[in-house]
Length: 357
Ligand SMILES: Nc1nc2c(ncn2[C@@H]2O[C@H](COP(=O)(O)OP(=O)(O)OP(=O)(O)O)[C@@H](O)[C@H]2O)c(=O)[nH]1
Image (cartoon, helix red, strand yellow):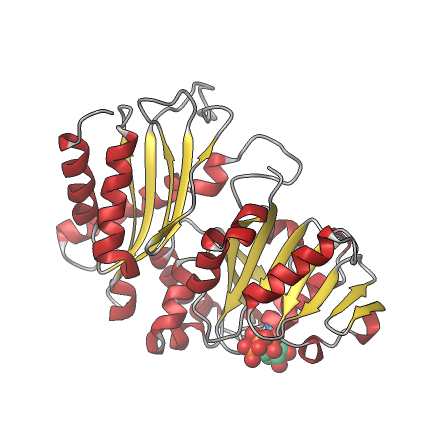
């Protein structure tokens, strides 16, 4: 993969994004990373500064570039790429983008998938969402944006656990489990997190190792949660959502599994139908597909109405216990106000009626 991985760091106002960045920027593993921030001033770079490359880009002593974004993120990312091509800046191998606190990460993710220059040269590695242990529950209760930020995350990082009681942290963790069971959670006191915990959560690794399907798809964690969820609903009492407010109730995380190879065109038609009718509510989708007319597995992911072009993987993932190839199609969805059954019905209806090409 010659594209450069991009990590999007998001989190509600005051959740600790700048504090985390401050820690990351001095970490040796951040060498060759270009970090896009809204303003240099906020991060306080003086003690890390090696030299000014230009007005908007500085080189830091860990070997990373810190770039302040003037105007929009798309222009900043394009400029950065062109400077790299013209060798006006030190070669960087990955990008980390800090979003503003109220931001919906979806538009940035759409740009990564759709802007021709950007989509050709960058790929989404992951969305990292910071959640403040003190105010996190309140933000989730009051701001649908913060629910969405947590729901689309590939990694959830809890900040300020030192200021919150153990009960509050547990209650927050339960909420996050229900909202986004597939996202591994880390704790970062005062922003102290190892870069390896939040970078390389995508399917492809910088070192060109085999794609990590299980680590990217996280379908087992989602399936385990989904079973518990159905079970609780079946019995209708005392389930773990009883104290969860309605923003969270609108979010569902589930995995659809197909044992037999699928008609690829029909699957895409089904997904397009879903995107056209419920695009805004398909918060995140990731999948590995066994298509009848492809020997190799195909990986697919999307955010709302937009899908990234599929990638062909070099080999089928293997079951870690038996070592056997796992050729099942697995589609993981995080949705808002769209249930598993509705998605399954649309996809199976199209899969059953479309003829093979
Ligand atoms: N006690 C404690 N305070 C923290 C921790 N992380 C961040 N803070 C403090 O929380 C406040 C907000 O942190 P920032 O890093 O500025 O948060 P932010 O997400 O960048 O804020 P905005 O850019 O305004 O959205 C600051 O005063 C930090 O010092 C932590 O783990 N523990």
